Structure formats: C-alpha cells, structure tokens
Length: 571
Ligand code: TEU
Image 1 (cartoon, rainbow, N blue to C red):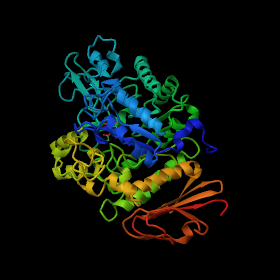
Image 2 (spheres, helix red, strand yellow):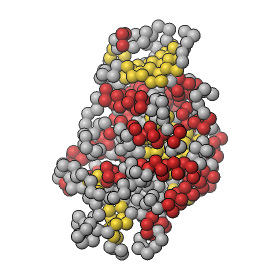
Image 3 (cartoon, rainbow, N blue to C red):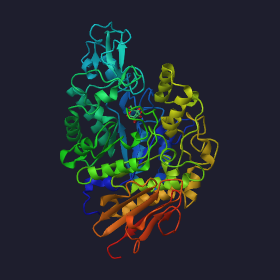
Image 4 (cartoon, protein in one colour):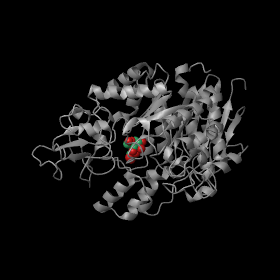
C-alpha cells in the first residue's frame, strides 16, 4: 500500500471507466444498450484493468435527454433492464474487483417525476419543491418576453416554461422536461439523501453528481448579461456556484455517509474555479472526493461561453491549464483527469489527429499525458480504442436534444447552416454516443437490431476485437497505463512539474516521489520535434517504461511519439 494513501481514498489509485449504457452493448436486439449487455462485457473491462465503472443514468426516464431526466430514482428504465439486472451487474463487477459508481442527477428531475406532477398544483405541499415564479412585473403571463428572468436554457430557448394552470413559470436550466429542484427546501434535500442511502444500501460504491454546482441558486433570481447578438443570457452564468453550495455538499456527505463509507464522489461542476474545487475537495471539509472542471474542455471556444464558437487551441494553453490545476491542488484537494465523456467530442479527434496515419499514436500519447498527471483518470468508453468523431453530414442524423435545438435556433437567428453543421461536427455530443465498436461485423457487435444511432463507418479498423488481439494497440497502451498506476506510487502521489511550458509541440513533465522520478516526453503534434538536452533531465540511468514507437532513444521525437522514463533511487 502507498504510505500516503488512506484506505478510504482508494479512488486515488484507480482508473474510472465511464459507460454510456445506451451505446455500450445491446443484449436484446432493440438497438439500445442495456444492463445485461454491460455485464456481458465485464471481462473486457477487467482485462483493461479499470478499478471503477461509472454508469451514466439507467433510472426510469422519458429519455428527453437520454436518461438525465429521471422520473423514478429507485427503478431501472425497462429500456435498460430491471433492478435485478442492476444487482447482477453490481455483483459481477465486484467479483472482478471493479467498483460501481452511479450517476446522480438531482439538480433537476423529469417533468414526469411524481414530485413535479404534484408540484404543478399550486396548492400542493410540493409546490415549493421546484422554482415556480410569476411573470416579470407588469408583463402578461405567457406573453413573449414575460418570463421571470432573461435566462436561456442550456438547450436553447428560455429557461422558464409557462404553466397555464397557475399562470406561473417553472425554471429549467436544461430542457423543459428537466425542471430544477428547489434545494432551499429541506424536504427536497432529505428526499434526495434518503434515495442516495437506498442506493448505498444496495451496494454501490459512489456517485458521479450531475451539475452539482447548480443546486444552490442565488437568493434573488435576477436578469443576466445578454451576449452581443443574442436575446437571452445563459442561465448557467446566473445559477452556478450559489451561496449554499458548500453547506449542501457537507450536509449530503454527512447524511449519506459518503466519507464514512469510503464512497467515491465526483461532482460535475461547469463554471467552477480552481479555488472552489480546492475547497470542495479539501478532505478536511467533508464535501466531495473530486470535481470535473470544464476549464480545459472550454479552451477551444471563443471567450464568452458559447461552446459552438470554435477557436484554435495552442498546446501551451492546454498544458498550462492542466499544470495550473496540478499546482493548485498539489497540497490540498484532488484532481480528476479526463479528455472526453458523453457530452464531449472524441479525444483523438479533438486533441489528437484522427487521420489513419496518426490515429493510434496520437490516441496513445494523449492517454500517456493524461494518465501520468496527478489525479484520478477517467476513460470514456471507446477512448481506449481511439474511437473517433462520427462523420455526420446532415442534421437529420443527430439525435441529441442539444444539437437539434441549437441547429433550429441558430439557423432561425440567421447563422448559415454550413457554419452550424461545422460546429456540430466539432463539438456535438452525438460524436461520443455512437455505438461502442466491438468487432467488424455489420453493427460492430453492438446490436443485432437497428442501432439507435448509426455505427461509425470506421468500425472495420477501429474495434475492440482487433485491438485486444494487437499488442501494439491503443487498448494495450491504456492497459499498461492502468497497471503503472496500480504498481508505482509515484504515479499516484508524485509531485508534478511542467517542463518546456512554451513549447508548441512537446508536452513534457516530471513526477517525483522521494528518490523515484518519472519523465514524460510527448510530441503532441503531427510533425517530428526535438527537445534541447538542457531543458530536460539527463536520460542516463533512466529506464524507458512506456513508449509509442518502440525502443528509440535520443531527444528527437517522431510525430505523436511519447516516452516515459523512470529513475529509481538505486540507479
Ligand atoms: O451536463 C452538464 C453540462 O454542463 C454540459 O456538459 C452539457 O452537456 C452542456 O450541454 C454542454 O454544452 C450534464 C450531463 O452530463 C449532460 O449529459 C446532461 O444533458 C446535463 O447535465 C443535464 O442533466
């Protein structure tokens, strides 16, 4: 065991693997992935060497946002199976030494959740469980622009929905089928904690908490600043990181026993700062194990918060951002490390080079860089195969509510359809949601039916069967990275130092723990690069631990070549 690792902090040395159930493995031929399908692939995950499986939502849901709109927190949607299937998955995962983390979506429910159905009645005791507000002062309820504030939902259009019955509006930061819960009401909080305890009792090992930094809203709901050329202000800017966030997180931790039971808790926090993340993950405060920052995945957009306004991302900016977080959480707190997830484009297409020539090397090198930072790495399904973005050509191919609404609204505002399509191709969430590519058969081994979203045409080259059979594949590289984390305390606890911060091609850093040191040299470009010997430690006495291009030495790096060197005190 590592000296600095407390047993309850087991998640510091684990790799987490995210499964998006809809797209992982179908077992019954309906074209949608399900729980028995996931269970049938556990041996594959065990071979990869992951320690934790994070399951995106499988709860009962009308599926307006693919399960992030929950109508029953204590049941499994029939599309994915039933509670017995979930218990089987949990037992089979545990039997292989894999822990299970559930997605927890409690900033909002579905509008079909019984709590909200009751809340629609103005006299119901649950009225105050959601954010009901009258029309803006002096405005006609229901008339255009009469919404209580000028907020825009994350999925386009006003963040307020008018309800004829009471003449009032309810708040939905996401779709109108995702009304925001009112965490100011103590009954709401107790209902959530009770549900969480129920899942802990069932044996789950932690929670990934959806937009958890939105649960505390500012006390007065006020208009936000409207960006140029727009008519509404992003709701996010006005409702994130409210005054009672820490209080609610501490209360949740205490009431559910997150720390007591040694559970992993990771809070998704768009718009959080480093200072906030440090407080939230300070073990002494008893809030969360770690948070997902959005800073590094927002660097390739223009300033202003519009994810569709694309911008170039120079390497020094990207590595500088990760280094800032490494330094900021070096003494207190803990980082999570991720390149992609079900909301982000594919890592190799975005940060690497997905051309046939460089796909494999760039996917490996991105893995090396990420996994050897300090923090808990997250692998999104298919990332370990170097799966790429999907070549969508027409808006009719998209299924994601965010993409469809954005297209409709942007085109109506006068943005040229080609421009909208280019932004969707780069950033659309469906890129990550195409079926997992298991083999080269017709639907990539994902389903025997019609897949809910088409399989990427590159499944003949990019698939798990081929990758597992090839010792030089991205899969085996990721397997080696997970093994390094298990075997070497320096990967878990070593101090981080960024070298060559201004180099446009090479990402270089060291990790140091006592006498033990690692050096990562990674060419993050599709051209060869070279490193000045004065800028990096002398490689004499270093043992190459993991490389992308075999045993090459010297300081010239081929396109997307990376090497990890190790010094031990003895050497
Ligand atoms: O995402 C919240 C979030 O801030 C984004 O990543 C979101 O996808 C946004 O549209 C990006 O442009 C979480 C979930 O991960 C996401 O799948 C859900 O749609 C959302 O919350 C609502 O539950």
